[in-house]
Image (cartoon, rainbow, N blue to C red; front, side, top):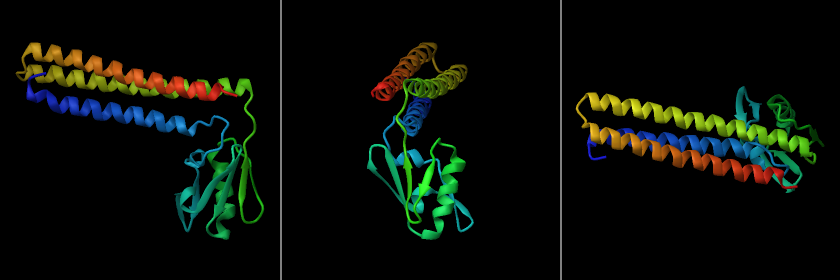
Length: 188
């Protein structure tokens, strides 16, 4: 790629594809593998003085063991709002509170449930791959437009080949993330 007019397209390509991979990795951390982790509650929003805020901004979240989440509100009067937020988030958890702490005990995952979760991981992975392919399409259209505006055909062909090579690299990153998450989920 020798034509400088193509550089912004490649900058966008890498940035957007990095974002797609990061988004997939972030989504994978939200999918629980049977082990308690504070990030499992990232989707929980709590009504706090008229605003919806993440639960992590109103409480400490700990994992005393691999199967338990412990939520310690900073203000005791928020315990009901936190409990309500967990239920509304529909994460499949049943919170219980003792007046000062909310505990969530995670059940053991059955083989069938693990397979369902793997399907969810694969769905998220496919969503990320579609995003990467759409980015490829967008950049290739930009290359064609640049060619109409005077970029030499050889440079355009070389750029399209580079876009495909980059796309393949990012698709492999998604596949690797998916395989690692699937292995994690299927480990008893």
